[in-house]
Amino acid sequence: MKIPFLMMFTGVLLAGCQDRMASSPQAESATQAEPAAFNMAGAPTMMLSIPNMHCESCVAKTTEVLSKQPGVVDVRVDLDTLRAKVAIDPTTFDGATALAALDDYGFAGSSIVNEGFPWGR
Image (tube, rainbow, N blue to C red; front, side, top):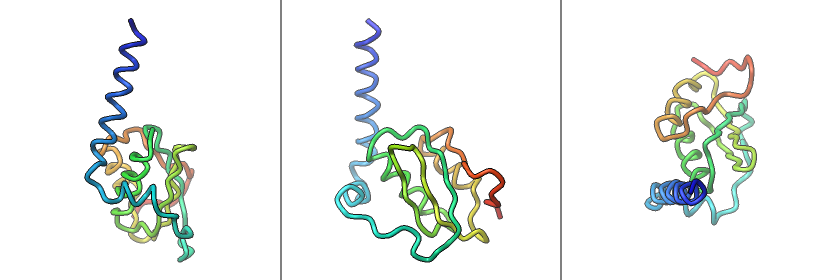
């Protein structure tokens, strides 16, 4: 009895994620276009752990959410490692705000991987 429930729950979880992204043009372009080279500006980078991603729609939404944060220069999200590499302007980027934005969308538990990195304003 537990296995059918788990399968049903997983199906709902995956469908819910896809439904949230269906109206986003970033979802389609993220999977169709070859990404440009990362961080052409040579900005400082940091790594975020985003443990609740499970599909390409999550990758697209994570990229969208992080890209909208002040001080973010470029973003690359990797579903296999559940991490995002973020190029930042350290004078305007606020890591706590970026993590709160991820949390607001449903990526609770995200964290900054770089120990001792000066990520706040």
